[in-house]
Image (cartoon, rainbow over all chains, first blue to last red; front, top):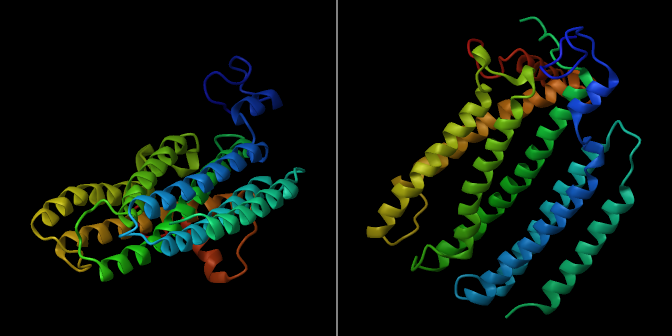
Length: 120
Length: 187
């Protein structure tokens, strides 16, 4: 197989497994950490956005509306997170069910506490 | 059309397609959240007269006009590493072109919309300045669907995803791989 410029053994045209590894870069099944951090960042940003709404613009965004939006968005983000990790790890030996379950459980508890005690 | 010859090793292609898929899932979550915001924004406009565009429901709505074009832009840049996704004459994928065209329309409409609301301080859904938001988003979603189906169909072809059991779905994947999902003439 002809490889892109810079890969392969100097015009021979053959590809070695080292070449393939170099073309892939970080494998998607090893991105669980990054995906988990992104999920947490998205969840915190969602809290920040809805809180800014009901603290600074309560006339436009009652606390109850903010909490409702926060809950729905948390569910959407959790589904996206789950899909990301499961799709990236399918077909590999990696299994991060514990990390995913732990993250989603922690976010669930965090969401319940926030909607119970935070707001105007 | 014959099956596209493999220009990069199969394993490399699967990994790259899945990286595109990662961007797509993140953008799918964003799109789903904006669907929720349509109700938030709609209920706000039914209960209060527009005295400011700077409401939380509008932050949410307008932030997706930044997030999704940036995300599709990232997909378009990374997409160049996957030969099977190229469009006619090695140009950008037709689905991506439609998506970017759709969001360009919405970006233009943001200016038109602000000009309209300078004089008309309301938020009636069906006013003309809102039309192109909706049309732009529909064009963008149509293009995105064509692109996403093609990525998935290729993952099925490479054996990384399960083929559809429904014959109509299987036919759709086949058409997508041949670049004929929406048109037999434009790949």
